[in-house]
Image 1: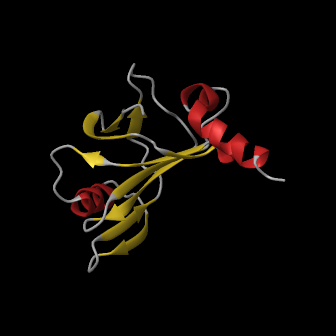
Image 2: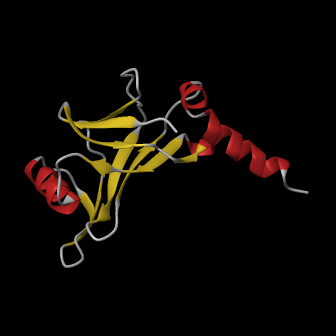
Length: 129
């Protein structure tokens, strides 16, 4: 699996493998491994409140959060090319894990960058009888 860098306001905050995908919708998703962030909840809650970014879900008692698109959030591959789509979200809780979702990554870039997700999607139809 490739490792992708996650940047917020041009500062590297973590990495992801973008290990899950929805090829039909141009979607990729992956667990975030944070760099020097002890609480994903506190980090994203503070960032979103400060920058007027809507929270879809916020349960402080569970330290669970789901954001709308964060425009200054970028995911880049190993050669520095940004994985651009029509939106991104962060979701997760401190006691479990956080995930980044990128939606609407256009073709043919999606197919070139994530051939394994396209193959898995295609294979689900080849196995139907």
